Length: 333
Image 1 (tube, rainbow, N blue to C red):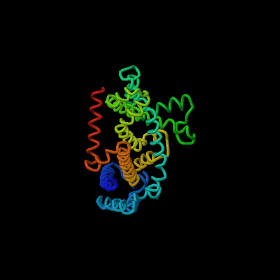
Image 2: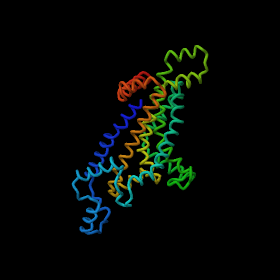
Image 3: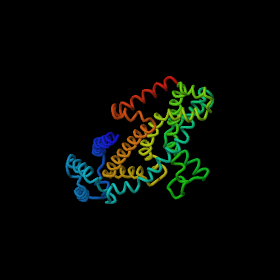
Image 4: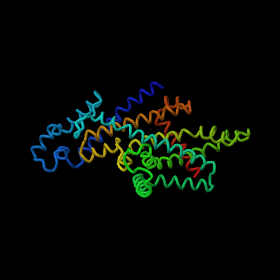
């Protein structure tokens, strides 16, 4: 397993390199000039050219790309912010705790809501409870987070005045609306996957055996059913953590939170390319680490997967689990 973990860590290098290359190309193709944005609309051409020379923007694209990659992989140097003249990595680390807290709180709320709803919907299949639960889940998957966020601000902040609509000055109340905004869709996704996985499990022979032994419904559903249905659920929870780490951009912008998302949005508007590139690389690294953690959790839940990961590889195992999940969706409706 140690060899597998080291292999996965080494595989993150080409992943980050690919993400950085795409971000660098998109920055080059984006209309606008960083030197012009920094100098202002009234600056002379000489002033703009001086800024461009100071920032090293006059160098060829491949030279600038090579310098950035070399600094990133040899010194963990993500460059210097054009606006603050501070190292990008320091500014990212200063703002990322807010994004991390928002993402994990949202996923925690989604897990606490989504898993029970999915289990209840599976146990009460084809009843009104199942229909209501799946209707709410469909609404959560379909509703854009930015629209939900604006709606929550209008209702709870503007109309009722019970929760702050922006910033973190209100203490824990300031986290309620952002967490609900990006956690609602995650809860809906987790509920749907939980229902599908539970329906597949509760029809197995060992569940009928447990019922024949006279075990309580709670022990059968939670102790036997949910435990054996957790692999697909853990997969989607890990994916949701990665999605929320990047999707918090919208919530941070709407609710004016001082996190990495709002920081990157401001950098994009100001053509602050080192910040954009550093933020994208940092998020890709975190997402890769989350995927690795999910794979390791698989082996804790089902030790037999440890051998499968070592022999078949991560992609083969995930394809097999995805196939089983899709078959369960088709059979269970």
